[in-house]
Amino acid sequence: MHDNDERLLCQLDELPDGGSRGLLRKELDDQLCVVRQGNEVFVWLNDCPHEHRPLEYRQDRFLSGDGQHIVCYAHSAHFDLRTGYCFAGPCTGQSLRKVPARVEDGAVWIPATLPTIFD
Ligand code: FES
Picture 1 (cartoon, rainbow, N blue to C red):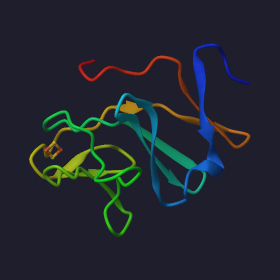
Picture 2: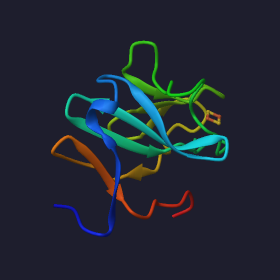
Picture 3: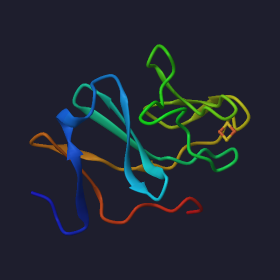
Picture 4: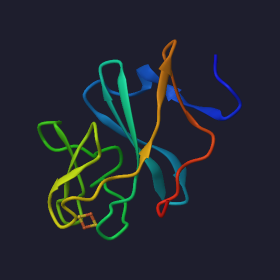
């Protein structure tokens, strides 16, 4: 069951296991960076804390070559894909903004209202 405060983001099988996708396109940019690890899904605002730019180097490509971290293409900030914590790069010590996601019956749910960048 889900409540009215949630919205369907996508189906789990629309996300590559061990990979990433950009979702919720608004104008030219995807608002969300979505990372899947098995049955776990981690959702982040697609907004680098360094200069508030989108993270990916091309569509759906948010991860390091080994798939272990989120990397901001602009100036190479590295983020833990599970916590969003920036552990290397120009915004070390800052974090991506998390969007709490819930997986149920193969569907990924997020809050109806996204956090804003400046919360
Ligand atoms: S904008 Fe992301 S590291 Fe500079």
